[in-house]
Image (cartoon, rainbow, N blue to C red; front, side, top):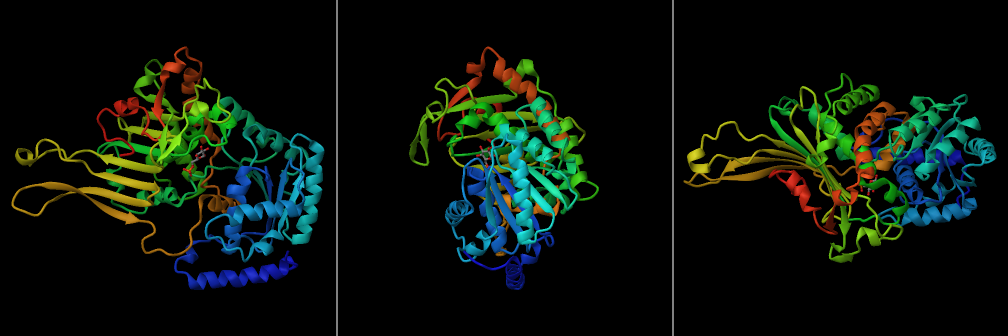
Amino acid sequence: MSSKTPEERESQVEVQGEAVNEERDGASCLWLGPVEPCAIVIFGASGDLTARKLVPALYNLYTQGGLPRRFLILGAARSGLSDDEFRSRMKKAVLAGEGRDPGPWEEFAACLHYQPLTYDEPGDYTTLGVRLERLEALHGTGGGRVFNLAVPPDIYQTVAVNLGRAGLGRQERGWTRVVVEKPFGRDLASARALNQALTAHFDEEQVYRIDHYLAKETVQNILMLRFANAIFEPVWNRNYVDHVSIVSSETLGVEHRAGYYERAGVLRDMFQNHMLQLLSLVAQEPPSIFEAERVRDEKVKVFRSFRPFDLDNLDANLVLGQYGQGTVNGQPAPPYRAEAGVAPDSLTPTFALMKIFVDNWRWQGVPFFLVSGKRMRSKITRLVIHFKEVPHALMRQVLGDHITANRLALGIHPDETISLTIQTKNPGARLCLRTVRMLFDYHQGYEAPRLEAYEKALLDCMLGERILFWRQDGLEMCWSFLDPVLNLCETCGNRAERLKPYPAGSWGPPEAAALMRGRPLPWA
Ligand code: BG6
C-alpha cells in the first residue's frame, strides 16, 4: 500500500492531468472543470453495482485525472469487512476490466475505506458520520459529500431517513448530495413516498436520481444533433415524420436479479425510465438555454402530453411477452420460468412493445413504438426516425407507387453511429433506385478518451450538474402514465393470456410484429 500523503498524491495527479491534456487531441473536451475535493460514500458497498460499475468508474476517472485532487471513498454495507478486505475485493473487480492500468491502483486504494453498517440501525449512521469526519480530516477533502445509494430499492427510504436523522443531509460545512439509483419507486404512490422521505432531509437540488442511459455519449448527442444543426429541426415533426421507433433489446436474461425483476418486470425495469427518457429526447422542444432546469422543463412537457392508454383497447397499443426456452448466441438458454429465483408460474413480462402518442402540435398523430426485451436475438439500442414517403411518386410508371422513405437512425449500441438512408439512382440506362446509407461513426477520427455512463454521472454529481438526472415532477408524470397500465396488466383476469411467449434468442412474440402493422420492425 502506498504511504504517500494526500498532498503528494495531489501533485502527482496534477502532472498526470497536464500530460493528458497535451498528449491527446480532444482531451480538453473531457472535463467540465475542476472538481472540488469531496468524500464519496457508497451504501451497498459489498454489492454487485459497487463492484461492477461504481468503483471501476471512479478508478477510471482517477486514472484519467478526472477525480478531485483530494478525495476519499467510504464504502458502507452490512458485511463486516476491514478496509483492506474491501480494497482487495475492489482491486479484483476493477482490474478484471479490460485494459485497466494496474499502475495507479495502490495510490487509489489508499483513498478507499470501509465502514460496516446495518441499514436500519440509526446509531450506525452517527458512527459513520464520526468516521467520515476523521477521514475527511485525514484526506483533506473539506466538506463536499456524495452519498450514493447503491442498495436494493426497498432500502432507499431507510437509508435516506437515517442519513437525515443523523444530520448527514445538512450542508453547513460544504455541499451534500445524494444519488439514488433506479428504480425510483414501483408506482406513483411509492415514488412520492420515497421522495417525501428524501426531501424531509434533503432539498430537491441535493437529490440526483440516476438514469445511466442519459449519461451515454450517444444519448447526450441526441439534443446536439437536433439543436446544433439547422437542417433537422424543420423536418422533425408530424409533417415529415411517419413514426419513431426506439428499441433496447438484450441477449441477457434475468441473471441473478430475479428477486428484483420478478416484482418489476420490463415495464418498470426499462420503460418507466430509460425508454421514456429516450422518447423525451426525440420529442422535446428546444429549451431556451442548455441548462438543467430548462431542459428538464421541456421533458416534463413531453411526459405531460402522453396520450393516456385506452384501457378498453390496450392490446392495440401494448404487447407483453415472456421468454421461453431457446438459443442465444449459439448457446441453449432456459426459459424465464426456470431461471434461479423465478416462480415456475411467473407472469412477469420480460418483453414489451408499446405504442405511444404525444398529443401536442408537433407530434399529433405520430406513433412512437418502444420495444425492449430480455433474451432477444441481439443486443441493440437504437432510435429511428422514419420519415414519410415522398408526397408524389413522379416516377410511378417505372418505379411504382412507393419509394422507400428516408430513415435517420441513431445507434446507441453496439454501433455508435448516426445514419441516414437516401434513395439514389443506379448507374445505367434503366431507372433503378437503391437505398444507400450515409454513415457517421462516433469513433471515426476521434481518439481521445471518453467517459462511460457511470463515470459521467458520478462526475456530474460531484460538479453539481443535474442535466442528466431525473427531476421528481418528470418521474411522477411517467409513473402516472404507466400506473393504470400496470394496474390493469397485473390485476386483470386474463393476465396469463396477455403474456405472449417468445423463444429465447428470437425477436419477441409474433404479436409484436402484428402491432407494427406492416411498418419496418424496430430492430430491422
Ligand atoms: C438497467 C436494467 O437499468 O439497464 C437492466 O435494470 C438492463 O435490466 C440494463 O439490463 C440495460 O442497460 P444497458 O446500458 O446495458 O443497455
